[in-house]
Length: 421
Image (cartoon, rainbow, N blue to C red; front, side, top):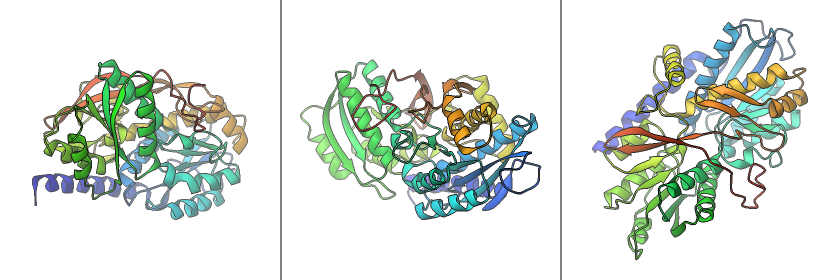
C-alpha cells in the first residue's frame, strides 16, 4: 500500500470511529438532550428538534461532527435551565447519505411532533426533507448546507434555512483574499459533483473578475472518490503564462486528490479552495505539499495560530463529551446553529411553526466562539456576516493566516436573495 493510500485509510478509520461514537450516543433512532417524557412537540415542558443527518455514507464526515456539536450545545442549554423553562429534546435519525431516506425520515420526525427539523450539510441531500417540512409548516434548518439556494426562501420555501455562510460567500471570499495579495490571474478548476462546488466556483469567478482579476483558464472535473485530473493538468501546463494561483472549487476527498495530482505533476502555483477542503483528511492526502490555502470557519486542533480562548473551550468540551477532538471546523457550525436556534426560540411568542420561522429570521445577532454573527433575515435565510479564516497548508501542517470577511456577495442575477442588490 502506498504512503498516500495509508494516509487515506487511516483518515477513513478516524471518520468511522467518529460515526460510531455518534451512533453510540444517539442510536439510529434515539432521543437525546432531554429528561422529560416523550409525546409530541406540543408538550408543555419540552422543545422537540428532529435531526435527520447522515451518520453513515459519503456525507457522514460533514454531518456527524456538526450533529455531535449541536447535541453538546443542547446539553449545555438544558443544564442552564432550558429555553423559557422548557428543555430541548433531540430525536436523531440516520439518513445514510441518501436523498430518498432524508425525505422519509423527515416525514417520520414530523409525525412525531417536532417543532424544528435539522437536515444534512448539503443542498442536494437536504432538499426533500426541507420540502416536507415546508409543506408541514415547520422550520427546517440545514446544519451546514453551502449552496445559496438553501437560503433564498423561494427555491424550497420560506420555512427553509441553513446554518452556514454559504458556498457563494466561500468562493467570493477566496477571490477577495487572493486579490488582496495582489494576485491578478487565476485558473479555475471546477468540481461538478454537487451544487456546493458549482456555486463556489461561480461566485469565485464573479468576485475575482469584479475586483479586476483575470481568469486565465477554466476547466472542470466530475469529482467523487476516483478523481483523475491529468487531462486538466495538461491543459493547465499548456497555458502560455502560468497563473498567479489556482482555485480548486471542490470538497474532500476528491478536491484533496486533485490537489495532490497537481503538485505531483510539478505545478507549484499557489492553490486556493473553499471550506470543504478542511480537515485532517486533506493533510493525509496531500502530504507535504506546499502553498495550499483554503477558507475554513476556524483554525483549531490540526491547525495552529488562531489563538482563541472560546475556541479552546469548545474543543475541550467537545473532546470531553466524545473522547476525540473535532477533525474539521464544520463541527463548529452545528454548535453555532444551536446558539442561533435557541436565540430565535427564546424570542418566539409560541412554538407554532410560523411563529418560530418569523422569530428565527428576525432574532438578530448572537455571540459564537468565532465572534458575533447575524443568522438570517426575512429574505436571506443563512448567516449574513460570517468571517472566514484563511489557513495555509505546508509541509504536512496547517497554520492560521488571517480572518477575512467578504464585503458583499456579487450579484449573478441567479435569484440569490443574499447577494448585493
